[in-house]
Image 1 (cartoon, rainbow, N blue to C red):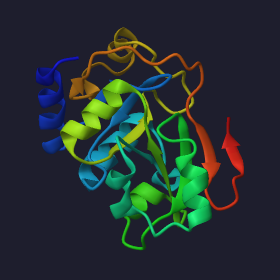
Image 2 (image 1 turned 90 degrees about the horizontal axis):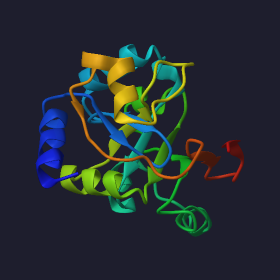
Image 3 (image 1 turned 180 degrees about the horizontal axis):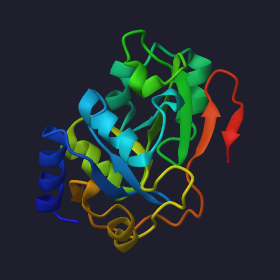
Length: 184
């Protein structure tokens, strides 16, 4: 991945586009989380309800703070012990966070990634991205750029090249307040 690729990806994001990019275990689909039309298009593409909520992925915690209510010291310690890394946390969202991100919940799913391409992308973009697996709901997630092209074709606006990480499963999902595990 080059700076040119990062510029192309962020240009498409700025224009309200949907991009595909490698993550820890699978290719992800992303868009600007505050662009209602982009998020709606992504949900339609995936055939997924907004009520499920979406994950925001970031290069560092500071990128997620505008979306989150203040965390207690206990929750912060629990979360930071796993970041950067492949653990997604459900954390209390600020009241103004759009329902299209939270779904039916008062919490928002967030992750600070250690994957180099994700980190570079979010740093270049300057904010978090929506991150959902590159697949139609209920279908296997793409793990290569070729699979993304075959399965999603021209429905995405840019494909950021790179290799997925060594994980064999998507990120673990935990509740930040209870530490309950929803997905391992």
